[in-house]
Image (cartoon, one colour):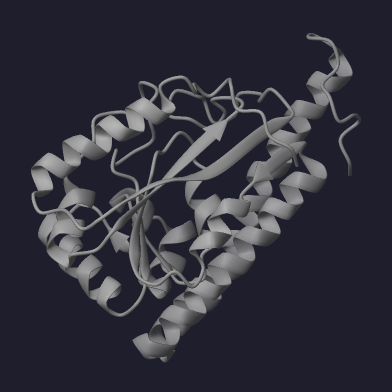
Length: 264
């Protein structure tokens, strides 16, 4: 099903509003379906495969599944994603990818482009049946145990992975960014790794922290992901955490979730 038009009809048009509701239900349902299809296989493969085989398979499957899901959103749900800049990180070697976190879709966007991404995710998401098995198989890292998080992240980076982390720790509540937790800076300091910033801009606060899950979105939804500054390994993690937060605030200060304009 294609959207009835590339541009929204006049505000209040009942046909367009009905399409927005349908697109929302299709989009959320498709994501749940992708996770459900992979769930029994992820649970079984966790038990059968050694880590050296299970993790690459888990990461590749997440990448392929999320790419398929984003293609569905483009085709059926009037969504446009400009993710081309992320492709420049493929083959760039181990580094920390630090991004702002305005929406539930952020992990999907980044993991769909980086084949060896290891994401630091909320413990609550890690423990959920729908996504937790896939995250564990891929070797993702939960964020509720700081010391273990840092040690696991350092080990993954030394093995050549690219670590994806959202320094805010959760979706943004007050734009442009919430206060940063020290985790990203601490990992960069302990692992002596550079930090590549990633800036995510949406045309709408849809699926943000303050957006009710089943509230109708304003379509078309556009998103642009761009690469920001790459910081060298820090000498002082506390100072670097403040510097990193200030950088994101400066870069995103004029970009609330209503100003991004991108092509498909």
